[in-house]
Amino acid sequence: MKLIHRIGYFSVGLFFGIVLLFFFLSGKKTSCDYSPEARVLKNIRIKERKFSPEAFSYFENNKLDTALVSQSLEDGDVDFSRSNTDKNPCNTYLVTSEVNSAILELQIENCDSTATIQKAILKD
Image 1 (cartoon, one colour):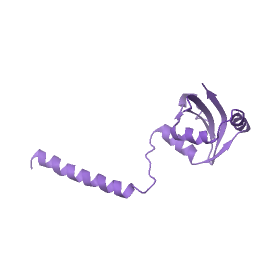
Image 2 (cartoon, rainbow, N blue to C red):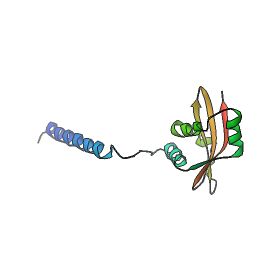
Image 3 (tube, rainbow, N blue to C red):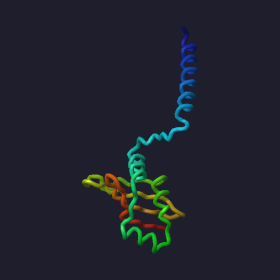
Image 4 (tube, rainbow, N blue to C red):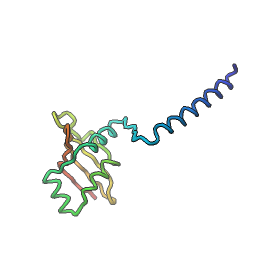
């Protein structure tokens, strides 16, 4: 069998395999969170969120909506160099995101069952 025929058969099989995968996985809530940043953000998103009194008062004093936390956890970045990932039992992560042409920094304590927003700072 010539090489061009092998490539043709392989391409047809690959095409049908991809179509079947899209068909079976289209209705499911599947995600490919393989990077460390994506895994940390997803882990925080699925837990019960609490606010420290300091963070909650910061949101109230600056008239910010606490829904910004959800937005930051969707499209934010984890700054691992400024995070403390060696604490037991709860790690502390610094999540930054852009909100209305400003930078929102959230310090989040990620425990087993809860994620507590410790501090929030809005930088221009």
